[in-house]
Length: 317
Image 1 (cartoon, helix red, strand yellow):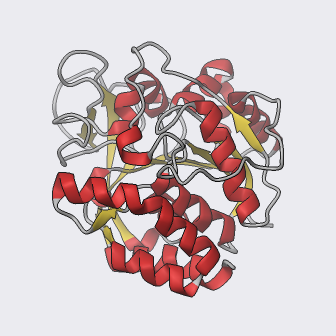
Image 2 (cartoon, rainbow, N blue to C red; image 1 turned 135 degrees about the horizontal axis):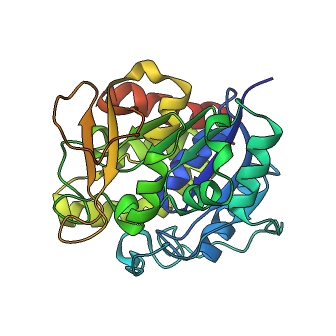
């Protein structure tokens, strides 16, 4: 029996690539998707997750979670990047299935309690659902197999401020709770996601190989590509969220350091992930009691793209 995976998400265009990778990969046992505010309001995130599951012909339960940050004011939605609908404003029809009535953090708790030591949580949006689950039941932390997030930055500049990555910035208090909890974490942050670019031509090739799913991803990504072209001169986009699913199925594609992490929750550095490498001799006490996590620093970008796009091309349509 493959280990169960919960995918926590705010779809989102790069989320859609990662979710289809997870839906189609034969080694990923996706038992549910939990949704959070971020790229879109949480109601649209839940609808989008259900749309993606149905697009893949799978009956994956979707659980709606947090609609805003725990403490910090909500910063709004990046409609100029993902569109108002999260999929580049291509206006897909509503899903046929319904969103589950159980609150997303409760589903996380129930799943971990049901299969202690087995559940992996892959989180590619703000970490509010995970923080709330931990606040509701701190005893789940040592029962989680691992938490893999797309978020944060160790040495790389931020992408929403000079120092902050967007998912962490959107709820820094939640992120600080999650990093301080006693579960093993992997941080796939901007240090690796900025090393891999999905070119428009690669998305077009996927659409030729898998016309239905690849065609959807290409259409949805058009607005995303245009944003990156205007902002960074890139003919494509950074391949953020799929790095998390790629790590899950093949961690050998990455190199990491071990470090404790805190999150700045105020001032000009709000949302910055503050890294204390294992063995660092500094006397600071702010990281006391924090376990070390894996911080991904290097990535085999071509192999990650082949893992994600190749899986979709092989199993979709």
